[in-house]
Image (cartoon, rainbow, N blue to C red; front, side, top):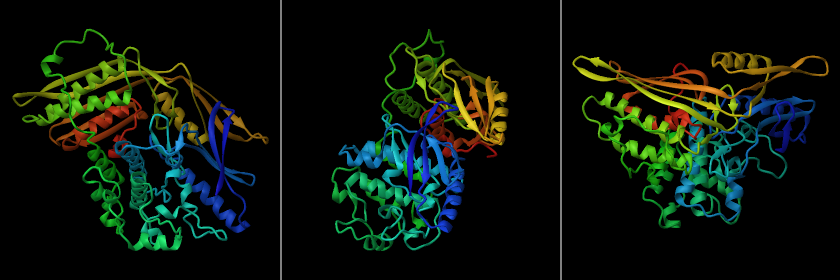
Length: 491
């Protein structure tokens, strides 16, 4: 439906991808598609998630409708599959889980992709998956066709689309289930060698695919039940949120198995003598190991449960400071803050964790745990926005006490087209986790963590352990389910 160009943004001096809409339809259809193309792209531009491609701008210039988006290094999942690369079950499950997390986040805003397929999933050299064409995919889901062509991706469409029924975020779960099925056995669940598209659509609406365990022995127990639920004909029988699919996959990979022990309170009673000098392997591997060790410690919670949860959180964050922020040689993190977007690779410094206690009756319990650190980069962040959006960003930059320069870019007639901002990356970040013993919850107040400026979250005590590990990922710019588990309070 379009052509994608690799291009240079001359104002911000960054590489972008620009997708344009093919202009080979009749005029009335083209006008309708242009309007939908831009409208849906702007809706997708509201999404800011590590597993969704960032949309910078969308509009119509002359006869050309375009979307400017993040340029991604790597290859599509379709290219990866065609290359003959063999993925282990854990690798395939992790990629699909990452996509599910992005879909879960989008679903909270009522946005349905409608065209989840391997070609719309980009995979970076580091194994990070990102969904592309969010919102754009609604266009080929319309009734518009070209002679002799079936638009869209029939191998992965859900029964609702086949039967022309309303779709919702659960429709994307079905499509992602079909992608997972193909990753595991080499072909989509409803395709056959004859290539008859109409017969395949009929199977999607009516037939149950063969269990993957019968086609590829040796897969983990439980994968058939997971795919049966993801590919249920009735949306009410599927996972109700894509995040549930992600959690189910990670349980099958054993990502939560504990294999080490977090230091005891006594071992933490003395201050650390200095930064960790062990050379870091990979940040994602280190965070996963810290999660496993912290999970084991958290499982021992008994009396004063909420206070103990906060104490374990203190030890977990203290380990993050020691092993990540004070690592030598240092880690560099890739940050992506809402309102600001992707930042240049930043170094971490000045990390500290404090634990404040208080009296609750006769018992002394944890009142709050506070983490603070800095993120800085020699390169500057660059962004171009419309006047209204630029005004919002300036307010957030001033509130975060970041230095920046800005200038207006005008058109030939002297009208202001957009505003370009160049920002010094020297960000002080802070997160305070406070126990509410009356409500049995943890209130989290953040500054420049995931979101530029302040953000507040409220977590029931029962959910705190699970969310804490995701919060640790969020702190350092790693793919995190925290944004999907909990939107900022009041959002």
